[in-house]
Length: 269
Image 1 (cartoon, rainbow, N blue to C red):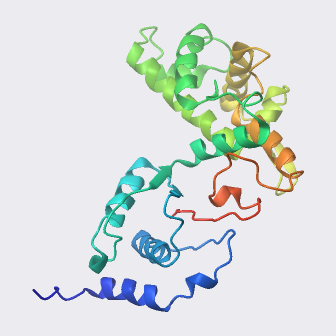
Image 2: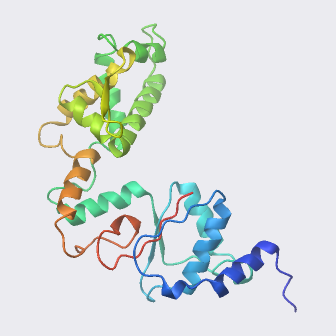
């Protein structure tokens, strides 16, 4: 039976596989930008087809969400005639946070970096549920009281929602605003802007953030207060700058591009 005619998109994928000089690409970090996720997907699949890894080696891909991971697995499993690989196997898809934590442990050692951080979002949520009620009536906590209704009838559901949102906020700060957390830890309630070499006082209605961060640090205790991602990442960068070869356990992916013989396949829209 004849194969069905290919669509324009399928012909483009086939053409990409046949024309792009992938074998000449050197291992390292390559960033490809695009505003259509489907185009990035097709480029990745063509790359995988032309530059396969060793038979028993897993592909490690970093994705921004579990939904993207499932969508990409389905794309891999499509028939080759439809632009896929025919099967989705030997593929390890991870969120960046999990991959980074494994890299921290590989570089700094399991003794210095616990398997899981007490500052992980899920753990922060429950810790905040315990800590916040005792401080809701402190000065500066009016925004949190307003969220809960300001009626002294806080329900566990509303408190859980609040704790989850605050935990998500600090989870992002650990990745993107480590400088703010460092200032707040040392009692400097400011917003630092290193790009413009300036800082501004933390607005009055946001000062609860600095206070809550210090409450969290005190609650985890002295031994664990430096186990949040911002502090661990700082130590990781300092140690990585002294390495001459990739340490065992640090797997190939885009964030390991500083190490020799690193193969980069970073999937991001």
